[in-house]
Image (tube, rainbow, N blue to C red):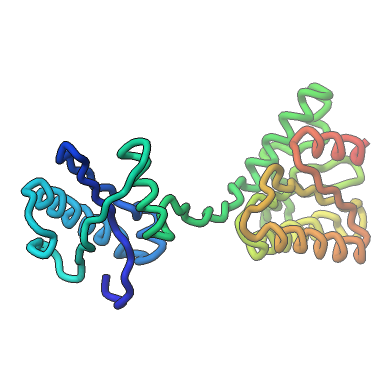
Length: 258
C-alpha cells in the first residue's frame, strides 16, 4: 500500500460446492490507524480488489491468471483446510495470516466536557435555592455580577456571591486544558481583589471540579492546576473549596456565607 510492506488484506474461501466467500481482514478503523487520512481510500481499494478476486474465483480459473484491478496486490495459491464450518475455516486462515485480524484500534482519549463559569454558577445557585429557598438570594448576586463605580465610571465584576462582609467567586474546572482553568482563575482572582475593597470583605473562591472523568485527557494536569491554585490562595488568605457537584458546592457556599 505504498510502504513496501506486505499486509494480508483479505481471505478467500471456495467450498466443495464452489461457493465463494471473501472477507476483509482490515477494518476501516484499523486502516485509519495505519494510513491516517488515507485510511478511507485504502478501505475502498481493498473492497475493489476483494470483489474482483471473488468474481475471478467463481470462474474456476487458475490463481496465476488473476489480474488485480489495483497494482500492489497479489494472491497466494489456494490450500486445503478442514473445519467445522466455512466460518471456522476462514477464522483459522485469517488468524494464521493476519496479525491485525480482529484487532481493535486504540481507544481515543476522552476530553473533559466543557461547562462555563456562568453555567456552573446557575446550577449552584439553583441547588442553593432548593436547599434554603429565597434566603439564597441574600447570598447570590443577580446575574452573578456586581457594579463598582469609580470616578464617574461603572465597572462590572463577576462576583456571584456577596454578603455583608464576604465576596465569593465560582469558577469551572470543566475545561480540556489546565491553561484554560488558569485563565479563568486569574480573572476571578482579579475580580475578587477589587471587590474585597482592600480587605473590607473576606474573599472566597469555589471551584467545580469535573466528576466521573477518570482517564480523560489532561486529567493529571487539571488536578495539578487545582493544587497550585489552592497553594496560591492559601498564601494570600483567600478561602477555597473544591467540589464535584453543584449541591456540594452550594452547601459549602451557604456554610461559608452564614
